[in-house]
Image (cartoon, rainbow, N blue to C red; front, side, top):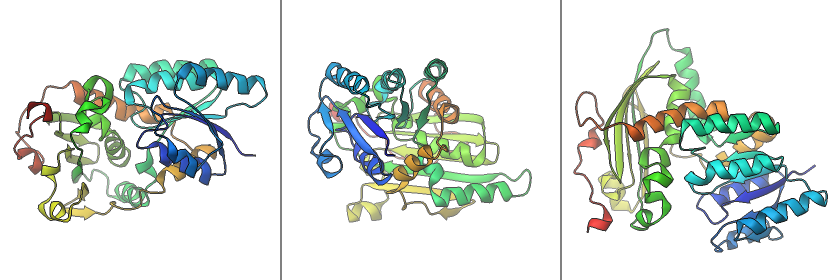
Length: 322
């Protein structure tokens, strides 16, 4: 029997991936909310879904459905990062399981509180950790697990996703709301690194600004240099010449590990895994939340020791300073 979904944050960038996943897993979106009403994309998936711009009316509608015998089975949370904690709690109070976008929450103690809420309600919270379902990442993890005991890999992670000036006016440009670069665009990569190479033993932050961050992680099975950026000027020259806006690179032992494609279906795979009882609950999300929290609050040490070569690029100016 199809499951009933409600979605919070319908106008956001990632919401259509959730709508697509709900439809492709044979379920239905009953209600959605966003304070912005530019949500015509819903028509491509669930034109009959009820939509609200005020949370109070959305809350009342969900309660009305429950009283009429229509239980919401899952609440999908696609709202801004700083609201995830509150919206996950809402879903649990409705007696629903919750599927939340990355980052699950901004602080480790928020995970503690949600675990307690799960125990109170008997419901579960699942985080979208889609890279764990990428076939290439799964293959890499198996390669690491099959390596001789004590083998340590040299890893270089680069992720650049160019953003315009709008980014800094939106909630994403507010450190208190997004968690900054490492949290907002990097949390699922940090989850992947720990899932593949093991727990963090050393964490050095070389730089962390409004448009880029870089550092070094020593993991159980890897020495990893990482660089994240939203500044188009940090893109490789050949990609800039083609007008490309995104660059993903993971080098393992000096060899390029290919995982640039295969992302389109990962949300649907994530939903199917959750529906099959194989989702990633709070305990699985915790290590990456703890790591990015430390990165966010660490004082950058400057460029010393093993650091990512792109960290040496000229720092970008904040658009508000132009």
